[in-house]
Length: 428
Figure 1: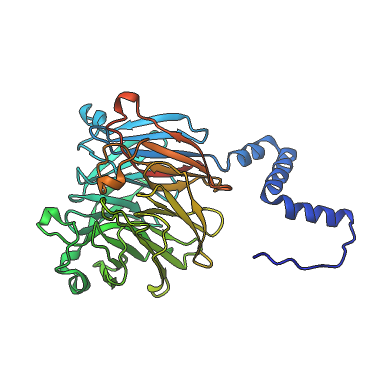
Figure 2: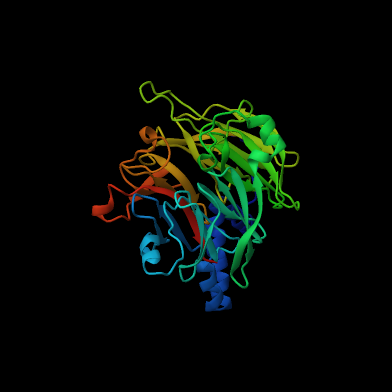
């Protein structure tokens, strides 16, 4: 509860009124002041200030026979479409890209990387002209790919082959190649904690074991936190700077059942992971899932919470402003907001759309964009991943209210449409 302290009556000088107005009007006042100053200093600076928070929303439709990237301006007008089947048919890309699942940008947001589990490969896209400049096969079930903080590598979590694969990066020459690889089946710490555990991954190697699902890096780029699944759960921390990548810490599924979302706190001191479970469709639970907090200085587990206030905790993302972690529950169409300073739930998210999955925020933190699954989901348990409005929700973060739902697929494709990955691209 907020505490109020009685202060001596101030002398309302011009200076004190000005300071108080700064306090109460906050960031909006400061932004307006900067724009006024810039106007006095020249139109070019004013234009740069007005453009500082502009962005695009890139959303993936992994639907049956679709495989598209829809690109929207900050005014939510669709400005471009990357259709992978059409590009392959026209001979503009060397391999088919089927079921684009997750998307991430490099540090400068000049390049996007898209992982496609069904085709087992990764597309690298030059964002400015939307050109697919390379397609690299990394293994069956290529679930997630992302650039390291220094943009020198892309690591890919491959469920089917139970591998964590590096793609080396030379952005200056736009050259990419397979680099090092960690085969989890051969790793001593993986064997110690996960051998013989049923997990649902590893189809390509004939194993039903916990396999790499999602990953996020520590702020210095030295380690990758890697969740395991899709079903079993578990988490490993991988040293990705060593000549031979290795697991330096492993949490069994009894300790950490993480199988999905990961997020690094703004100051880099904590890593968040979560676990989701669809539960029994005939006897659905009141809530299912968990979330975990790790100290990145020593990779120790510092908090476990089973309070998700919904079913099948899934996507998680830190807001760009403020200490807030948003986490959505796919099975109950709601979510929670966690204060990352106190690691307590401070808000609930309601009426955010049908089967919410992955989310991201506008650069100024004013809006959240949450993908919504379709009536014929291609991943996840069907009874919780089935949605009614394939596309994405737009949520105003100040009051956590839904502004609108965007459904880009034409009416004839809505039955096949199934949105999953989403990422906001900053234009500055």
